[in-house]
Length: 300
Ligand code: NAD
Image (cartoon, rainbow, N blue to C red; front, top):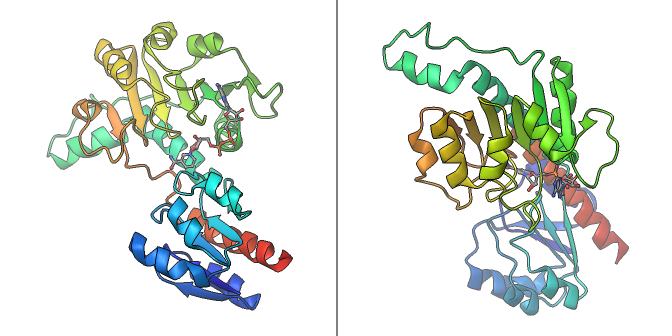
């Protein structure tokens, strides 16, 4: 059995395959036409987000039984084409939940004490002690939209800090770490609102002008979920009016976001879609995907 590793992956993942007697061939960065040429000899392929497993790649495959995506999104795999050829598609949606939850928590601390703004000011030679009087998270209300894997990890951590945690999720009726609330109640009561939902028709622009109008003056918004769940124009206006004190964003409607009007505001905190980018998260994703691919091949 032979598995092509076409994006960089942890060496521990390669070991998982080798220990099962599977040959792992590392060829990161193959051009699409080279991938099409190479694929016929492989039983499995492991990718992250860079390699596109297109219909053409899948049609060129002769022995392919499994496609493994180390990570969450499957946008780079043509699942319909794989299904037509009875090729299994596996991914590791839970591997980086803690990493993303910790980034959201980091955004909350950053917003409460304006750490990025204070860093920029101090490095610029100002010593603006008064300007940077902040807030404690203790005793504040966090509203989590989407009480799934990441939302739950964030809720646990926020509770441990002494925050009150509300969660809105129409598909979750009870929750151990948070008090389930209606969306309007969450908007009205939260000091911090963090999004942890997929982008669907239902969640697109779930935070829009009407939503911002219902929120507390000075609310902090955190989006480490997907671009498009927040109406960025409405967010910009809500920041200009002071309704939103700070917006912390890891994801954008258009990525890569090299220019953005939110970047022009001092009170925005922005990162380049790094929620899952931790050593531990990537190691977990690599090892888990290798195990899933190994198990799928051993069953055939
Ligand atoms: P999950 O599937 O475990 O949880 C999502 C939750 O959203 C579910 O409980 C679901 O019921 C809920 N939901 C669905 N529709 C809803 C709606 N209309 N209103 C409220 N809740 C709704 O997913 P997860 O692993 O927790 O991931 C959450 C999001 O984080 C996903 O969009 C994912 O793509 C994103 N993510 C971002 C990064 C990053 O790098 N920033 C990394 C990993 C995941």
